[in-house]
Length: 64
Image (cartoon, rainbow, N blue to C red; front, side, top):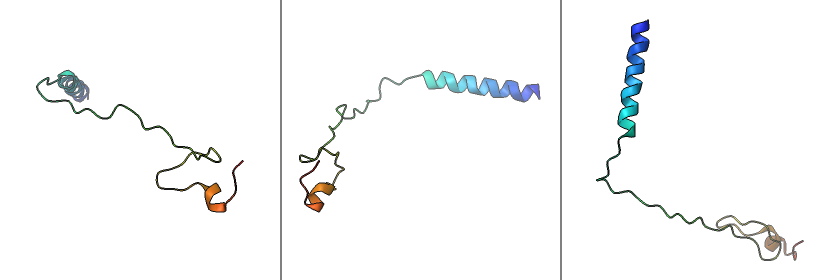
């Protein structure tokens, strides 16, 4: 039983060593760091989802 635990710990240690290695030759992919601002309805101020109209425009009311 202790041999199995010892082999497991050695395996985890080897994975940790390889995980810390970084390959500087590979290019890093840059994502857009800027987060898109949340859109709000101009009449009632509710947050809008992509491609969905506000409920106040669907009902025809003027908002809050």
